[in-house]
Amino acid sequence: MKNRVLTVPELARHTPLQNEIKKDIQKAAEVFPMAVTPYYASLIRKDDPACPIRAQCLPDPRELISGCGDMEDPLHEEGDSPVPGLTHRYPDRVLLLVTNECAVYCRHCTRKRKVGDNNRGVTDHDLERGVQYIKAHPEIRDVLLSGGDPFILSTARLERIIRKIKDISHVQVVRIGTRTPVVMPQRITEELVQMLKKYHPIWINTHFNHPREFTAESVKALARLVDAGIPLGNQTVLLRGVNDCPHIIKKLVHLLVQNRVRPYYLYQCDLSRGIEHFRTPVARGIEIMESLIGHTSGFAVPNYVVDAPGGGGKIPLLPNYLLSLTANKTILRNYEGVICVYEEPVNPTSGCPATCTICKSDGVEQEPVGLQKLVDPGFPAVSLVPEGNRRKARHLEREDKACGC
Ligand SMILES: *Cc1c(COP(=O)(O)O)cnc(C)c1O
Ligand code: SF4
Image 1 (cartoon, rainbow, N blue to C red):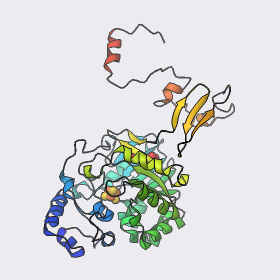
Image 2 (tube, helix red, strand yellow):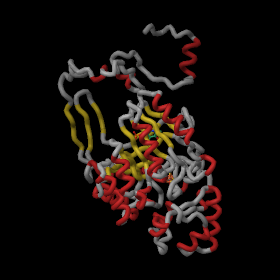
Image 3 (spheres, rainbow, N blue to C red):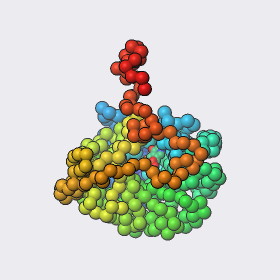
């Protein structure tokens, strides 16, 4: 951390740069700060102008171009934030930002507006409010520590945070999202994993985007974490000019599973300001999924998701495998393009085993959410209508008498 490259003159000492390029980098770095660890900088191939490592860590003048869909907070994290630094979007889990520092400021970062900004650090007061919020919400069973990068904190500070969260009786799982195994694998020390081990179940997601990020050091960091019994997942961002190719992604997921890391998400690039040049069409993601599903081990296939602009959460996307439906036959195609028919069961009785009580075991009948309302036999809805629908408003004006139910 101490030896990070933070300025263009320092960068020029690591890698030869033409004056024009220096100026461009400088301009972009004034808007979105630069930080590169000496380790990650050492992976840049100086003879490759399209080096995927360089693209992910060196400022680029294209960051200053505003794309037409760009938004300041595309995921609406602040809107879904009941206390600063905590996002409560899904029913049973929250995202808690524990720092806004990272080892390397990824040029494609969706929280680009926040990371490395000295004025937006996470205070003890913010953290305490976050912990209090989790305490007050018994439905939260999974707490995801993120940032910034939680492994930038000292082991002692991180331990204090984890312990506070673990002390809340309804929290079942703590998750950590970190890029240090990729950009500063030296941080995965024996001391760190010994601490984490005390708080199982701890799940970790890391962030490998390219096969070239696998080195002797990063492989060792992953092994340390898995050997400590920590289930590892990986979140990749689909990045134009870096990894937007079925062959690159396939090689990446194979390297991940060889290192006992489960590919978890493949993210469509968000609409954050300054990353338009990294965005690919959604079609590229579908093409990549088409090349993976069936063609390689099921556990090597990540979920391809678009994080819905406006805060709708992650939406999974798949190629179309369902070709048609009739009352008693479902027509499907497989990864090879073979078309087959699945015969539906005769007289299927739906519902649950008569003696099962799992749905009532919390003492509360779960109210159906979203589309469940259309399927739940106890719920009379025949349609879900978005708020502010004009046609519905007209119905109300006319005192909707048509239907008595
Ligand atoms: C991604 C995310 C989570 C975790 O989602 P999973 O699908 O459970 O991994 C939780 N909260 C927020 C705000 C998120 O963006
Ligand atoms: S490590 Fe994560 S939070 Fe930090 S800059 Fe990279 S993508 Fe953003």
